[in-house]
Amino acid sequence: MIMKKGCTGECLTSKEKRELMGRYVTNQKVKHDIDYRLEQMASLEATLGIDSTKSEISKIRKQQDVLLNEIKKIDPVKYKSLAPLHID
Image 1 (cartoon, rainbow, N blue to C red):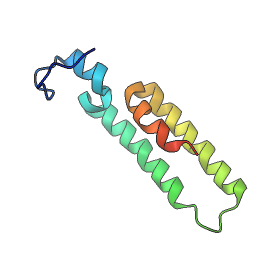
Image 2 (cartoon, rainbow, N blue to C red):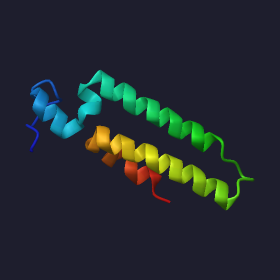
Image 3 (tube, helix red, strand yellow):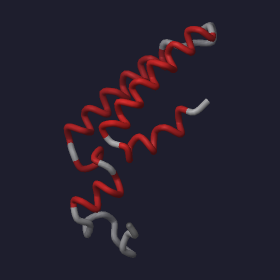
Image 4 (spheres, helix red, strand yellow):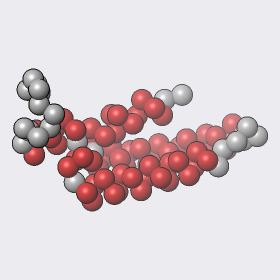
């Protein structure tokens, strides 16, 4: 889908917004569900420190991968914007 020149989102239909920006932007429940998972991911990340072992880091990454996969099921468009940030 090509966005119309000069269009900032107001001239798009709901379907076009969902396709371009994902359900995260168009649905409050989806936004809440994803934000909750992002908070969990941040909390997990905050438990890591310079003294964390490779085993601890691996365990946290696996838990974060589970949360990312849940986000992918909820909104694939939002997942695509988040997944590159998680690659080591």
